[in-house]
Amino acid sequence: MTFTEKFKTANSKLAAGSVKTYLSTIRRLANMAGKDSIPETGSWLVAKGLLGKVTKLPINARKSLATSAVKASKIYGKVVPAWEKLMRGATRQYETDRDKQQKTSREKELWTDYSKIYKAGQKLWQDVPKDPAKWSFATFRKAQQSYLLLLYGKHTPRLLETLKRPGKKGPNQLRKKGKGFDIILREYKVSRTRGASTFKLDSALDGPTEMLVKAGSRLLKHDYVFANAKGQPLSKPSFSKLITSSMRRGGLKGVSAQLLRVFKASSNRELIEKAKALEQEFGHSSKENVRYAKK
Image (tube, rainbow, N blue to C red):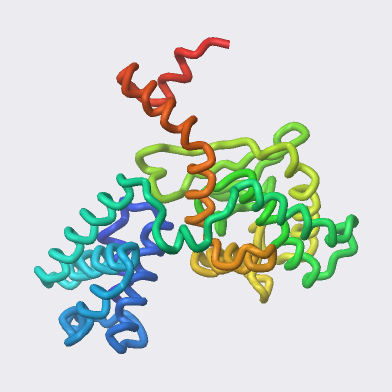
């Protein structure tokens, strides 16, 4: 078995998306060690200078790479105390920094009002032809970028590269619901503990969503909502890059999916804190709180 096959077998209880992310990060770490791919033996994990390179990175990258190194070492059956120590330290620092609820230097540099995301999408969408039956693939690609600003200006779900068009089978689906749409996510980072997540798209997205779906049904040879420059399904990293490039086209250079979630959470901070306080008072989850709230 190859390393990838061994990793997938050993982590079969993780969501498929999480496995892909781990493998991508291990591949990045291997590249930092001068390898073209993930080696089948683990000696590269103790390559001279590799740990030092990771230690110099920002905390998010340090935590991610160190955790992936520990995951990889277990597949090799090779204990590397230095990686475990770095992972524990990076995780503690990451959690401490998050608990402070202070903007990072990058967040301070790129900070913007969350409402500006949707407004940027509206501006770009004005240039999208109104008849999707006449779109070329190039037009679809530009409309896709504009649509992502509209979508992420209203909702900030985890990356949607696996989202299937209405009527197409898949764990993650865009579904026609009455006059509008909703999204069902059955496979995401914490789906095994949370279960399926369903949310209704804001009604302002009804028209653009209908247009994008109609054009995609005609132009794409697969069932996914979004596509790369070759018309193929997007990988998780390429979808992340698509969001970043869409934001840049909308005048929001450097804004990533993670930052969008920070922007939205910050704009709803008072509401989130009140909900958390209510959970503490009632002593159960927000889902259970909803059951107590009568219409």
